[in-house]
Structures are given as C-alpha cells and as structure tokens.
Image (cartoon, rainbow, N blue to C red; front, side, top):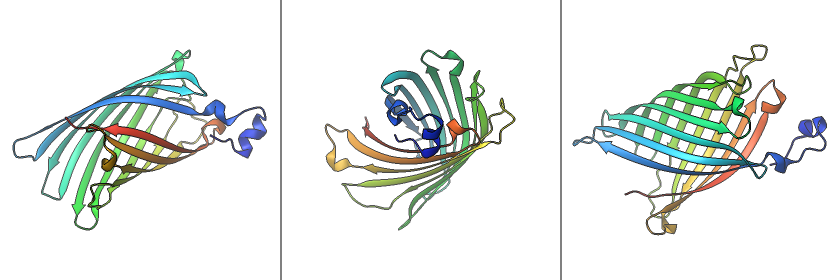
Length: 225
C-alpha cells in the first residue's frame, strides 16, 4: 500500500506498510435444489482473521442465505440476506455487525454470458461513530461466455452510499469497487480449483481517513462435494 501526497503531508512519518491488510478466510457453502430445479436455497458460512501492518487486528464471522427461483431457462430472481460480525482486537468499541438485504435478477444469453443486477440495503451497527453507517447498495455482475476447460472470467461492479448517521455534520460517503476474478480449473489439485481476483476500490469522503483508493489481489481455492 502506498500513501498519497495528502496523507504524507498530514503525517510525514507514516508508512504505507503500516496500513497493509492481510486476511485469511475459510468458508463452506451448501446448495439445496427442488426436484424440478426451479427453486434453490444457498447457505454460506465463513470465518477469518485480519492483520494490519503485520499485527492481528480483527476476527470476522459471516453467514448468508439466498433463495432463488428460475422463471425460465434464462431468467432467475433471488432474495439475499447476509450478516457479518467483526471483533476488533484491543478496541471493542469498533466491533460491528453488518447486515445486508437484497433482491437480484439474473439473465443468461447466448454470446453475451450471464448478467446479474442486485439492489439492496446495508446497515452497519457499531458503537463507533466512524464505523456505523447505513445506505443503499447496487451491484452488477457478469460472467463471460468463455467455453473453456482452462479459464473462467467474472467481473463485478459495486456501489454504496454510506450515511454515517452518528456524525451528521458530514455528507455521506460514496464507495465503488470493480473486481475481476479468473477461475483456473486447469490448475486444479485434488479437486480444488484456484481463483485469482484483482480488486480496485474508491471511497469519496469528506473525512480524510476514509477518502481512499485501494488496489488488491487475492488468491483462493474452491471445491464441490
């Protein structure tokens, strides 16, 4: 991570490595489908640990549920709910519980791939004024129509309007994220498929410490049982 000119001017002694974040997460997913395949329920659970500047900074647990219904071979509607609990090491006032509720529509077209649009609402409950916020969210996802045993490609665009209602003197933050995920089944080992995700995010805020640009890369493995 590198600091911008504005951050360096505020604290010339600050180093980008002090704000580097690393995280390890383990998760499980399960899918139930009706006999005719038109209804499905997907459940996910995950637990992880985060390090900031090399020091243990937080533990997180997350669960989510999605109920899907196929209207036809090419159209699917779904409702989603998720919750994430974060315990911040040494600063319990910053602990948070994030809940998301959304509705999505997916369409698959020959030559175009699969498109998904999701509209939702987010609430972050916390005792810290700079952590608690609520607002709408919008997400667009696209799976490229690549017919290959060696590569799968997904692109996701997300946007949120974050109202930090405990500090009403500031305008809401605007957050946007773009991520590209490559699936590499040709490199699978013992049934585990590797994935690589590159993510760029931008937060526009009147609060200096929240006005950020981020670029990250993550590696994962996935398998089906």
